[in-house]
Image (cartoon, rainbow, N blue to C red; front, side, top):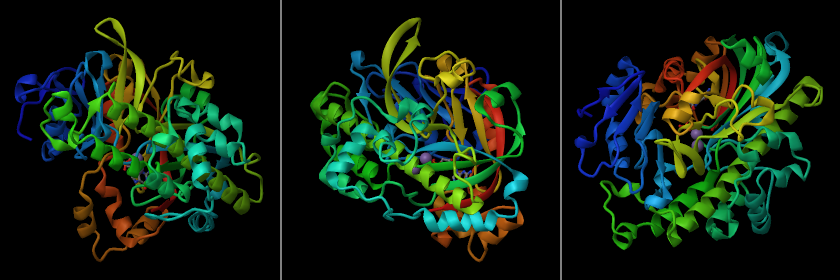
Length: 482
Ligand code: 5GP
Ligand code: MN
Ligand code: MN
């Protein structure tokens, strides 16, 4: 990308509307000067400019410092559209893995309690929790049950003893997005989802045992129930084959929308439909149902982790203090109220590889955290670190209540794979104190730490830009990967 990136204040760089024909708003990319060089090597900034042409887009097409190329929209992208100005909904702005997201589970164990059990623990997790593309799980639902599960979210499985009601209080939207309609989800998608709920999925998805390595904000950490040397479990997965199929189905139905509704797109992958159109309404209903499935998938993954810990440590999960800190989506579109140029508006906020980060006092922040702000969970990579942040007001003012979602890829999968030839990544990780098990050796190479940016740098940017603030840094001890 050789276009203009004008520095406009703290860590924010603007692509002016003059850059490309049809841009309705500027692009805003949050990054440090050092990161900009890497970002320019990719087509992602052009994608930010493309998104700025979408009908009804508000304020700016925004990208986070974990930005990299994605289908149509970049990963790390945020855009909000106003239905009253012909605003559109776009599956590419949500991503194929609808409601991919992260959940953090706390324990009352400390580093000394687990350090001699890590291999046993990781093995038990790996052999209990299904990993890898297309893998089926131990929970089977028939199509009718799968549709009910999509309607209700995790409450459906909690009612069957797989978790407790308080898990819902600590899940974005209480694990249930209103307006989801499982009957708008194709039979094919339901079939794919029926046997995959409670499975991790491929490559980038993981379940990781981590230790709190440093605490940056003691007050917020206390409110979150986090302290130094405490053991936590981070879970990253989405809506599996079901979400993928919902996305694919909708892309097919959106193909003729530009002609039908009279707008032009600079890239076919930006396929979209007006929010208030039959195509748009159908996708929204199906996407919300798939999102509920995603929350349910992470609920079942968490429950399996609780059972494994109970088996390894010979105590119940309740006794081990395995309470959920929070669960937050990073691939989703939601109708939210935001203040734009002094006016309150309901807009469709698309977050694709971006995390909601609401500040203290926001009614959607669970009561337990309302005084400090929403917990934000940021995975980094399996060798270095991950983070817990807290939402802040700057996000409401500048990014529709949004921050980054991870470190973001620094190398393509192919480049990372090539780089891993002849190496034993699991042994390298072991030398760094991390036990890793994966369903594919190639997967480990594609996912090796240096395939990602340094998450500390990414978090530094969102902290400095006041999109969210540092609370605690976690170091990996053991990980299972797809
Ligand atoms: P995505 O949803 O974009 O595939 O991944 C989100 C983020 O997860 C990535 O940007 C990366 O920073 C992080 N990540 C990927 N694999 C791992 C892992 O094995 N462990 C940790 N802690 N983070 C990871
Ligand atoms: Mn995913
Ligand atoms: Mn993800």
